[in-house]
Amino acid sequence: MTSDKNEPVLPRGSIIGIFGGGQLGRMLSLAAARLGYKTHIYCPDENCPASQFAWKHTIADYDDNAALTAFAKKVDVVTYEFENIPTDSVITTAALTPVFPPIEALYTAQDRLNEKTFISEKAGVPVAPFQPVENEFDAKRAFKVLGGKCVIKTRRMGYDGKGQVIASSETEALEGKKSLGKVSCIAEAFIPFNREVSVICARGTSGETKSYPLIENIHQHHILHKSVCPAPSDNGKARELALQILTALDYVGVLAVEFFELEDGSYLVNEIAPRVHNSGHWTQDAGCVDQFELHIRAITGWPLGNLQPRHAIEMTNLLGEDINQFEALGEDPDLRVHFYGKSEAKPGRKMGHINRILS
Ligand code: AMP
Image (cartoon, rainbow, N blue to C red; front, side, top):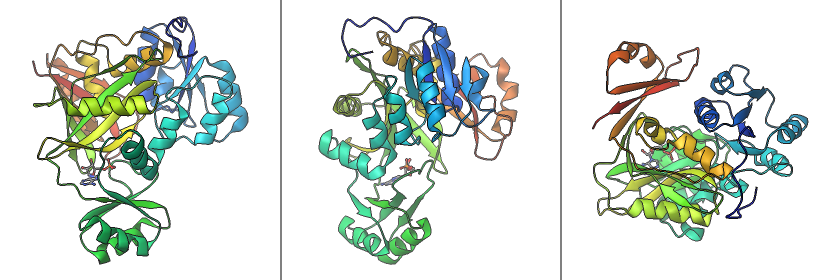
């Protein structure tokens, strides 16, 4: 496929390859099937949630070159549902099949230093002041340069608050870096934000861009708890900034942008996810094109469609044993239940979500 405006839609029956077999891959597979596509999951876990709905499943490690090449030859386009796939594996695949979102987006989102540098310098969108931190001496220096309380985070593989510490003194910064181990880190100024919001937006192969209304997110223990859309207030600025990032990345697919909203109504980007996102799950029951279908539309050359929700919705994550107490709510007329088909309800594990239609 190319970015040519007249490019026909990827023909029905084509095969979409997806790196990753979690719940996002599962919901992408369901959406792809609705549009007449087959999905082929690449995931080392034999019993992954996506394999229950995918047409095919390659069970192999992400650095297995022979498996990667065979996979790329069998599919018509490749996408991914998590951002920690080795970029080399994606490059191997991209030599044989188009990959969307572009590898540059993956490279940017995998590393917090690349991410913050790209967003502030290339996209011209504000982020929290930051400093690279390689060792304990750097951590002390960063604390001073940032002018006080800061958050030290590993550059790679951090999620849901894992791999980060808050430091309120030079000594805490030094000790905090020590506790994170011998890995490259970044220190960010601690932002006393008003609230956390996100924007889910997309860019199609034709260059068409669109976004859903602003989403307000409530976290518990650093894990997303609830998302509400539309957010109770929206000055429109976050959506503009998200579209700016989409364009700067020459992006194709769904992109999630998480922001801190400050007291004065301005925004700082916290992070981006080059994929469908937990804060966009409410779209499934909002009466518009949902984020999973949106991603499939974007990468296969369809028009993006209608992203204007017909309902206000609140999404709540079901973690661990939460999945059991919500079974009784099957009768609630305003509630839609989504389970991920995971067998073991470990504490903190994302097992499903519920969407409550508010109006
Ligand atoms: P992250 O893994 O970067 O998304 O961070 C997880 C959560 O930690 C965020 O959702 C915020 O609630 C909080 N957090 C992260 N970075 C900062 C910061 N620079 N200032 C204040 N809170 C932060």
